[in-house]
Length: 103
Image (cartoon, rainbow, N blue to C red; front, side, top):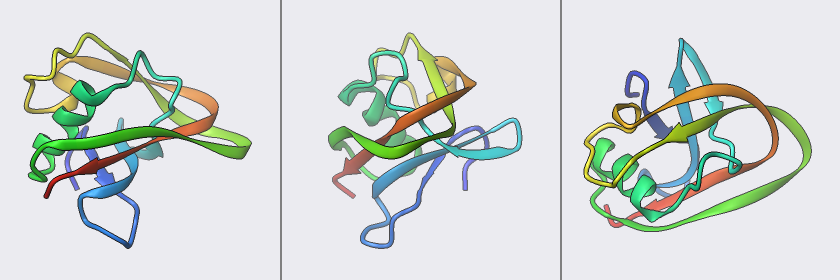
């Protein structure tokens, strides 16, 4: 577990799955409605987790809305920790982010 970072909640691989962020002491999924979430953001997460480079990232829809973190960012992809380039805000969403890394 990384402070103000992320970890995977997926049994298939330690470096792929749902992105859950711990922020302000709470663990929540990262909303896919987050500021232009793309491979450069996923690259920061993979680097932070020691999981190599990002291979893919995608949005997964849920059948209901739930409390998540929405990430507001100005990441350029070179950061070593996700929260270096943005901030998270509590958000109600029905889609979350999945990331897959090479590691």
